Image (cartoon, rainbow, N blue to C red; front, side, top):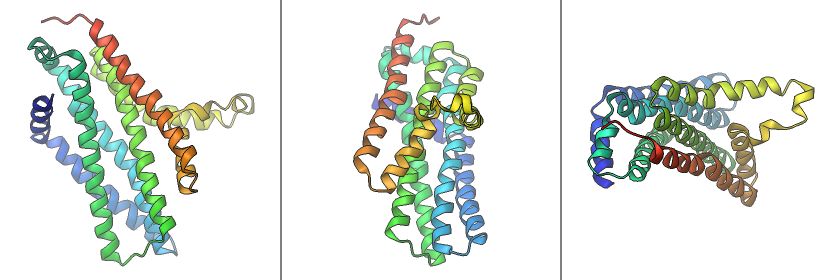
Length: 249
C-alpha cells in the first residue's frame, strides 16, 4: 500500500493541475482576506472571517482537482484494472486512493494555513483567542465535507466507472444539494420535517457552532457521526460493491 501511495503521489505531482490548484489556493486565500479587510472596519475580525471563508472556496476548488487527479484519471486510463490484476487487493486499492486524496487535501490546507499566518504577521493582525478558535473550527468543518464528498463520489466512480457521473455526484453534494436545501427552507410545509439537520453542510455548521461555543462534547459527537455516516459508510460501500464488480482484465 505504501508503494502504491508513493507511486500515486509521484504521478500526481507531475501533473500541471495540482500546481494550478496551488496557485488557486494562494489566490483564494489572499483574495478573500484582503476583500474582507477592505470592506470591514475591524481589521482583526475581518482577517479571521476572510481566512475562514477562504477555507470553503479552497475546499471546493481543490476537491474538484483532487477528484479528477486521484479517481478520474485512473478510471479513464483503466489503470485500476491493471493494478488489481497485478495482485493488489481491491480493498487496499480503494483505501489507498482515499488516502491519496486526504494526503493532498490536508497538505493543501496546511500550506493555506502557512500563508494565512504569514499574512497575519505581515499585516500586523492581532487575533483574540475566540477569533483563533473560530478559524481553526472553520478549517475542521470545511475539511470534513470535502472528505465526505470525495468518499461518496468515489463510490460512484468505482461502481459505474463513469467519470462524468462521479464528478456530477461530487458537485451535487458540494453545490446543488446545499442550494436546494436553502430553497426548501423557504417552504413552510417542508421545513417542519427539518431535513436540513441530517445533511452534511448543515450538520457541519452545527458542529462549528458547538466547537466555537465550547460545547466540545456535542461537537465531537456530531463529528464522529458525520465521519461514520458520510465517510466510513461510503468507503465500506465502495469496497463491497467494487469487490463484486467484474473487471475486464
